[in-house]
Image (cartoon, rainbow, N blue to C red; front, side, top):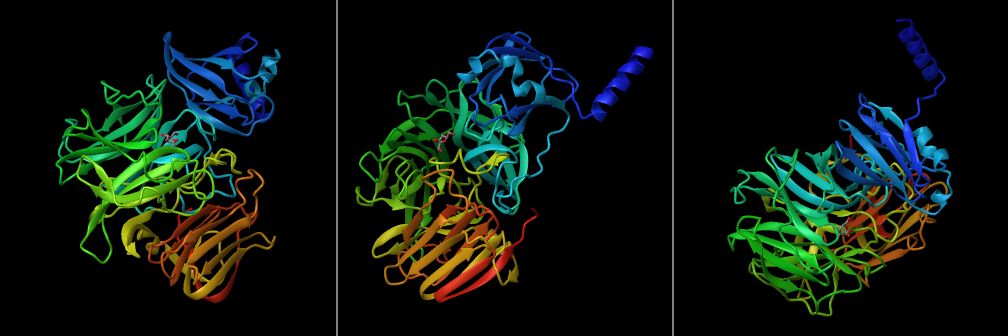
Length: 569
Ligand code: FRU
């Protein structure tokens, strides 16, 4: 009894001093350590130092490998913590990589002093650039949007997610849901890496007629397992997307093409079967299936079409009406990295016809149509089962040229605002129109006289116009519309912090395919997205001002009305 009392007092004393018991580790060599994870607390909080190389953590339970994690465990300084959720009887078998780590100093690494067991992980925002109305992960790294679907009034958005650091690694599918496309709730991670590889990009479909046999309205995820080779795998959910079970017979499609990924699947009502489009090297491969499990290769598209400067990734294929006509056409989306109009990642698309077997392009092979002429618009895909026949898409708002370096730490990357897609004709050609999703109108709040950190600026345009957003430090974004040339430019070369990458300070320029009479400009803490009111042009750019832009200067034949965006954040 006396001993227990003394121990309790000692514990209280240590807490009072702010010291914490160090995690018991065993050093087994100059690069090797083990930790038997204590039971009783929910998490082990891992200290991360981004400039360090990865430590490779093998999680072992009952002599079996449970999972592997790559985490930049801190050697000198801690940038932030990430939570590891402790399972029963687990052991960390850690191998450190990197030169500076082989100096024999492993015993003194900061990570041992700062690792702690905890029942909680604080996700309160600490980033001044975190957007107020764009989707971001609570913590960790995010790239492409994945597995997007709508069901029973809820929009589901999965995403490429690293839960163990704010840089690309350990690809899992994070998951968020929303009922208004503006406020997002974090859900448990949907898919974690397995023995077939990391969880790369893919889609979800609502299987309304139980074609796969997992149940009526099952949610079926089709995604790339990125191991030694890239293969396609399947998982399903019978609880509306809360939890997923991986199909026992994965992978369902294999190939000897090294870049073979990002399946996008949709029900082709006219053909009466499912279609899949996926990126295979420098083309898009098209498949068909009756049951989502057995797939038949139908054809390939694109080797001679469009831009081939970079890798083809993240496709989509959809049928839409051409505005003002009774014609329907198909749009094939092809994200490409690098090769974008201003360097790095971007989204090109092709217009044509599709019969369930073959996509026939009506564009000239040499022509490239870009969906968005900003620098930060990538991996654009659409939601399955969107209501009212809408084609609702979202883009990852970054660029592979600097995505891992942007000046945030707690998390990295945001998604664009949600957009409605359509088609329009201009000078005999068909183009994809992009407008802010109609939900953005519902988010319009009070009218204000100057920009705020989260606002929409509606500009009525009657000719040449220049709109400048600036802050007291003189940091600014300058947007110029040339009515005669029919071009819109955005210059972020003096927008704030531009120093983290030489590829960041640029001015981007877009054709407007006719006269612009209204601009809708969405400003959030780290982005400016400009749309032509009719959807003929859009431009998405990141910015990192040291304080929000709080002044607008409008020159030329234009008038601006500014509205705050209503958000719960
Ligand atoms: C596109 C991409 C995809 C891939 C994923 C991996 O940004 O390269 O092709 O599935 O990211 O994170």
